[in-house]
Amino acid sequence: TILIGLSESVETLTSQALGARKYRKTGKIVERGLVLLLAFTTLDAVLLWNTETIFKMLGQHPELATIAGNYVRFMIPGLFFYAVSIVFQKFLSSQGKIQPLWYISLSTTPIHVVATYFMVAHVQMAEKGAAAAWSFVHF
Image (cartoon, rainbow, N blue to C red; front, top):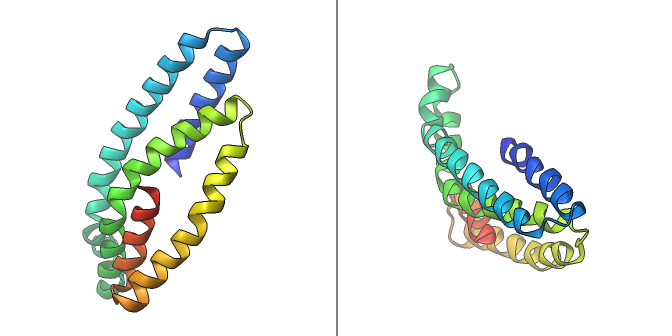
């Protein structure tokens, strides 16, 4: 996604700062990365909120446009947490600390599967439940 592309600069710049032993600069880079990604996520959320309307204007079948709009609206809260997590993933990766990321992924994947199954099958929220589970896991 675009968020990942924007966050790549955090990894590159923090790697350079760490190599130059400018440790305080890494904090500033992370702060700026957070501001940049959260600002972009806010703009992205406005666009995504209108997915249904945009799809209908582009000639998509109205029922599919509604389903896509529902999915995206329930996914928007998780985008902000996702943006924050990407910045810290890139920060840790720039230091070569990949093991914490692996443990986080290992622990959240089963939670995501269970949450999605619960929201879709038991609560019967369909596409809204799948998106809500995605948002929950990124919280």
